[in-house]
Amino acid sequence: MAAIPVEARSVRVLGGARSGKSAFAQALAEAAAPERVYLATAEAGDPEMADRIARHRQARGLGWSTREAPLDLAEALAAEARGGRVVLADCLTLWITNLMLAGRDVEAAAEALARALGALEGPAILVSNEVGLALVPETRLGRDFRDLQGRANAAVAKACDAVVFVAAGLPTLLKPAPPLDWRLG
Image 1 (cartoon, rainbow, N blue to C red):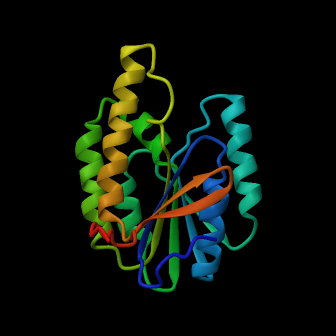
Image 2 (image 1 turned 60 degrees about the vertical axis):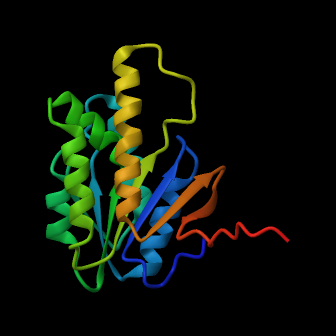
């Protein structure tokens, strides 16, 4: 597991699809506190998504309570985060999709989420896909989504105490990064 600083109260976990980011975030949460809340952003719009949700719920097992937060994530985090409890929000990519489909201002919602992180009374872990490393989307909607997701990832990562990137199941700590020494020789 990546060495997350002990003082980190908010952790951003990024990675590609099926990269192991949710499993990493879950293990991090289970090591952090005995009481755990899962903020679910997914909505079961079809049988395939309903199956994914069921598999995620089963993988969490006992010791978790679940709250659905498909749109109002900042408010749900503020309500659930407190001492002795860790909150895991998974995933912000689906949250952004939900916001777009509801006609909400994604950038304003991401900024509100970033502001809320500094005022939380307990630890939080936020999972999201990194979608900017793939091919340029073919459609305007796809490009708009990629751009909004990238800006939201940056805003929330800036507000978090620690950021971890997961690729091929391997976590790499991005923030705090070791200081760069630009001196030569």
